[in-house]
Image (tube, rainbow over all chains, first blue to last red; front, top):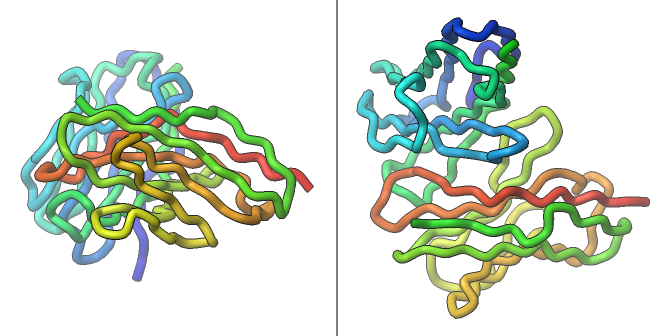
Length: 114
Length: 114
């Protein structure tokens, strides 16, 4: 079974631009979560989607948004990029609807904002 | 609010020596506990998890962890490490009755030397 895939793997953007990152979960998984990883703040939860509905959102500004499609693929968008948005963005999928289930992480998208 | 503290940012150890990576958590409700490992340029992989039952949990690659409710700790151990165990290790919690949101510690970099 294929793992979680994220595209693109690397991205360089300029301040003020917007970016869209994509995540394809493991087949059959309907829960998709996004995390931001930076050296300073560590791993922080962005949001989680289940069956196209956002169930939970972390403490990030409204510039960060996401969505999930009927095939469970998910995208996250960051508008008006800032230098501090440079990070590794990780997507995770889970078969389980509630907590306690294993989350499978993708390799991440490395975003650099210049 | 939940929080996770990993008491050591770096742990150097010689090959075949035992190792313990320490994790303490704080939460007003019951939680599930996890340890994840991240190898360079990769996503996170689940090592083990505690949901309920026996407080000693065995995971992959010879790792085990013990849940101590009174000390709110979930320390990770391995009796004999290999060079290939060099990686970043993250302790995480998720809340009973919640969704799939994980709160991570800052991580511990395990460096195994020959």
